Amino acid sequence: MKTMANQDQITSFDAPLMERAARLLEPIILTVGAVVAGFGLFAIFLGIQGISPVTFALTVWQGGFGSAFSLANALERAAPLILAALCVALPARVGLVVIGGEGAIVMGGLAAAMASQWFLGWPAPLLLMALAAGLAGGFGLVSSVLSATRVP
Image (cartoon, rainbow, N blue to C red; front, side, top):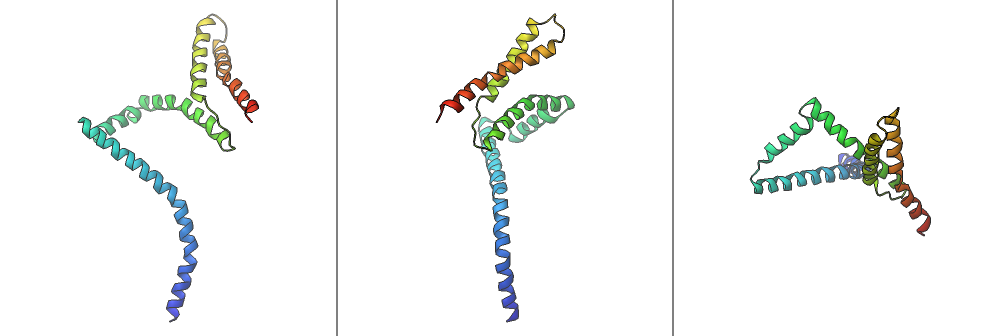
C-alpha cells in the first residue's frame, strides 16, 4: 500500500515537469515536422519530374558547401539578406512593422555602383560609394516617418 501512495505522489509531482517539457518541445517538434514535410513534398515533386531527390540534394550541397569558394560565395550572398531580416526582426519585437529592407539593399547597391562610375578618378571612392549607398537606402526612412506620424 505504501508503494501505491508513493507512486501517486511521484506521478502528481512529475505532472508539471512533463507539461513544461511538452511546452518546450512543442515548437521544436512542429518545426522539425514542417521541414520534414516540406522536404517530403519537394521530393515527391522532383520524383514526378523524373529527377532523383538524392542527386538533387547532393548537387545543392556541393553548390553551397562543396568547396571553400562555394562556401564563401554562399555566405557573401546570404549576409545582406540576414542583415535585412535582422532589421525587420528587432523592431518586430516591440510591435513595429518594417517593410522595404530588400528594396533598400537594391537601391543602396545601385547607388554604390553608380557612384563608383561617377567618382572614378576621385580619392577614396569607396567612402563615396558607402555614402551614396547609405543615402539611397535611407530614402525608405521617408515612408517610415510618414507611416508613423500619419497613421492613427
